[in-house]
Length: 86
Image (cartoon, rainbow, N blue to C red; front, top):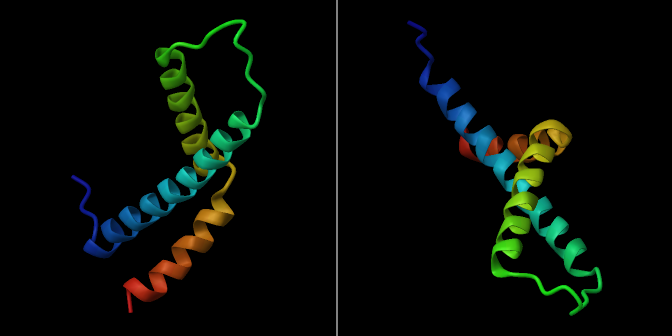
């Protein structure tokens, strides 16, 4: 059985929270970019399509934060860790 220290569990939780925060920032970026595309009434969009698009952007943003934004997440983590773990 693997036993983790309390500090490593806290660190993991803080790092995951920082990753989710960066993901939520990029979710808003993706959503604003999508909203800037002109829409046509030729093919109406259903609420289900809008919901699916929002969930897709949310998953994209989580994946981007996890894979490609490690330096941003690390910077946010280091700034918060200074204040939290003094």
